Image (cartoon, rainbow, N blue to C red; front, side, top):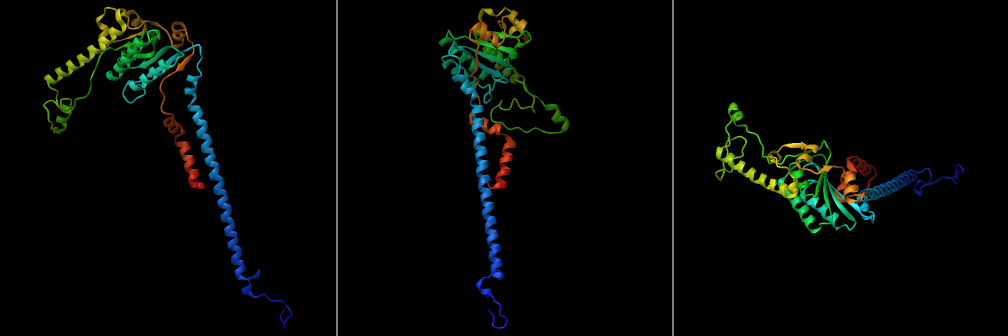
Length: 328
């Protein structure tokens, strides 16, 4: 108590409520409390988004795994295996020989498979890839004579696509399907006159007399053109022989069959290129006797499909969450 005023006084050095040091301490406490609160929010959102991502991946896994489950849950009475051949037949694509052969072998190894249907909708592609598939079908038919393999055509089965189908026991089509195109081609462009008009000189250096004979900016010589024609004829004869081996005496004696022309399904039946009208369901029911269809078409690796189907939108959303909430 002050002797002069009779009032109590507080020394600022003691840290009283109204002292500057007390005010600083109060501010620091509030800052620390705010930091703790923000840290708790960050931790909450961190856990939340990790849980959300985990739940999404689990759900996606089960969605993508359904095709595999369908094989294991197939009826014990037997099923018809389906293998889709859609689009160009080429190495590295969905219709590569490796992919189609993998599906064929998986179908053969399944004890419940009563028959195999190749659902064809292909304009052709690589003669090499087509030949690999053709040979595998013929091999399976030889080792498993009681397991029928049929080809069912939807829109088109031409060139390399027909090459593959010719190996099957029978080929079924729609009346408006397009089949045939038994031929081989090599195409390109020539810009020789274009360069002359532009005043451009083509400079090509090669080691080997004919190394650059397919260069589009240089004229093709008569000898080189004859050589290419001989090469194509040789490949064509391999194609023709494979079709003859596959179709046998069902083929009619018509020189146009191997000319590269295409026919409708109805005309194809008359020429012996195909056997009858039918769909996958009708063939499974009436020819194989197993109505249940099980897809054995090889799918992408599940992780690849996972990454693809997540999409950029989901990735963007997660990225925003990472930036906003410190997800690590």
